[in-house]
Length: 151
Image (cartoon, rainbow, N blue to C red):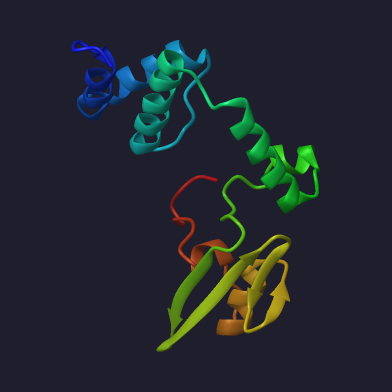
């Protein structure tokens, strides 16, 4: 590191850069449109990319190790690894908590659905119905989607 290394200054500046300017930097550094994620995500990815372009990316042996770990998780199915059917779906292992009539309900996200009280379910709505006895949008019931939002 030299005495006048611009990388730390560029990284520090990300915190105070207006969001439209962060998006412009994204377009410049990634040559693509920025994703519709929050500001914190943009800052962290831009910080990584600035360092990656200046200092180099992951070492080949690290990439190979990550590939091997991915294969252990998905059996080597690269299509399954690169595509999540529902980008809004929480990742496997996430625990969803909801108190209903004084009782805490815990749902675990599984690879092919959800688990509640030791039983597998294909949808959160089915679990919400089992808990309440009435029809609910499971995503709203567990606070994963604001009922006023689009999507």
